[in-house]
Length: 296
Picture 1 (cartoon, one colour):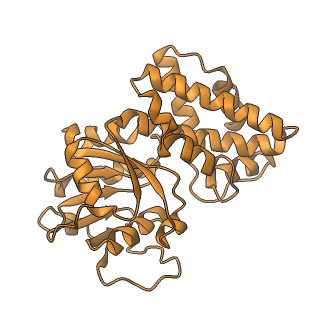
Picture 2 (cartoon, rainbow, N blue to C red):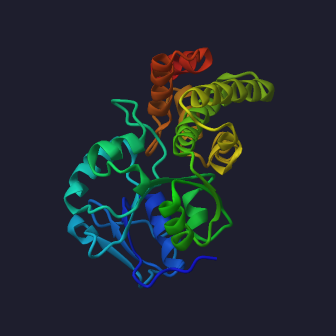
């Protein structure tokens, strides 16, 4: 197993539940962590503060002289704005994106946004995705994750994500589509749980939706086996069937005429998939119909 290099200081951009959980994970592995958030706060999950996690509100602390690795965990809706602000302090260090979702206004994936803002060289950008409930990762529960990217990303990821069961791949686009797709299918599944007429219809809906995600992904260049990996089937099983999932719970709330609680990216993910399908001339009738129902 790869060892954490003495010089590894990981800058984590975003200290919501997932960013805070990754901070705990990386710090337990032995690396130093600088955890940035706009308000300097982060989630503790009932755990004792770790000496090798430093909180900050100052992006200057992420400068390469301080951090040789970046992890981006900002919600999709704020990803572009945050990366534009971080641009001043970026000098080419590897960036691993842990945000799952699509930009609401454009439908672009996070790698697209990152390349447009601060990291034009794709070899330095990777994606981590999989069945990962934040609280469980923070507490060290065994977790599988797909790590997508080139040699440098795999090398870095092997050092800092030592607790994760990693599945390496070069299929970045496929890994991202899975992250966006599972968000969309999860909110659909929650909606059908209430509006549908039984478990059979729930299974029918999930299958139809995921088949369209896969069909679109293959057209965009994704590898079929990626959809069977942790980022695909694994994450789908976790988030499209559990009330612990924010997106599943959001679908339930929408079906009951209530406002979803917290950060929910399933609707924008669904919108992005329908938009990309139109551009790629891929027929996605079920996703399109569900988007009309969920976005009213």
